[in-house]
Length: 162
Image (cartoon, rainbow, N blue to C red):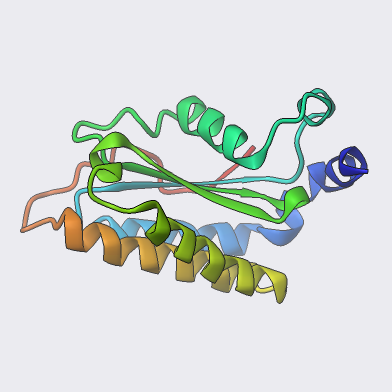
């Protein structure tokens, strides 16, 4: 039945993340990146293509593929972070580039995913996304503070609907 959930949810990302919500996330990411040297990328996918579901593709695998496709790895200091939301599976994954992964435990990302999941489960997608960006900001500001340096905007701040 997973394939049916994905088929139904595939076009639904815009329903949970309308332009107003995408605008709010974009502004939060832009403000966040003034506090640290990281780059946050936010991607939402309603459902996987049928072939991916049949092949057993899991959200974490798809998040890694999105990380590569969106070039979140391609930052000067290896400080890209992808927040990936897969609506059909009610999944949230955070993938961090090697510069960040060396300093931030997976458990910290898991706590942020759980925070977002609670809001999403209540139908509060914008609130959950903004809370997630805020929590990521705190981690990046702690480990990669800007120290007055200009953070070159290497990745788009606007969330991507896949």
